Length: 157
Ligand SMILES: CC(C)(COP(=O)(O)OP(=O)(O)OC[C@H]1O[C@@H](n2cnc3c(N)ncnc32)[C@H](O)[C@@H]1OP(=O)(O)O)[C@@H](O)C(=O)NCCC(=O)NCCS
Image (cartoon, rainbow, N blue to C red; front, side, top):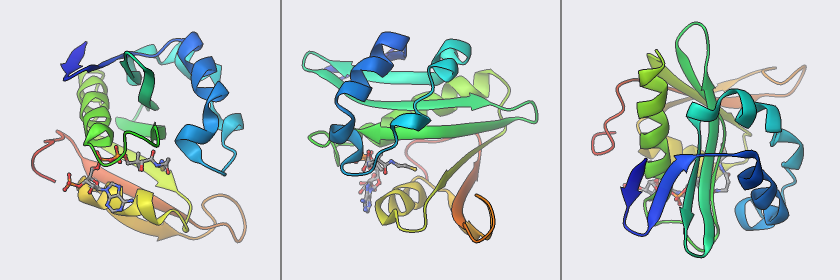
């Protein structure tokens, strides 16, 4: 468990995911990503699914896992609309990177849509290389793929 000011980052449980889904718009705005919030990921990869919680609820979360070839894959990361720009996204990534590294990850990977300029700027700031990969999500559906090596030094992108 990592204590950061008034926000604690701990393993996520299924109750947390239900709570996030109830407040989905606070994390994702108008985009409907509810179907990507798979309870099975939290059930099976509890060590790398993390929640940042405070007295007033869940400030952010990161859901990911480590692949057999040593990639710490981030499936979802979001911070609540009133906590953005405070460094919480970076802290969640740091905690995920530590957990993934402990479970054998050598690198981190994530993807986003071409239009998610905020996510692209955020990942670049965290030292990720960003590449557009044609047909990643099927014919004609390009995605931006982020990669970076571990260890993850929060202070040194
Ligand atoms: C992307 C997201 C997780 C960033 O979280 P955050 O808590 O605001 O990020 P941080 O405050 O830790 O920012 C870390 C760095 O990224 C930069 N950054 C974050 N969002 C940025 C943006 N939209 N544009 C430019 N830079 C940005 C910050 O300036 C900061 O740089 P610094 O450390 O040099 O000051 C958050 O905006 C979010 O939840 N967005 C909606 C969900 C989403 O799109 N998730 C990504 C899906 S792949």
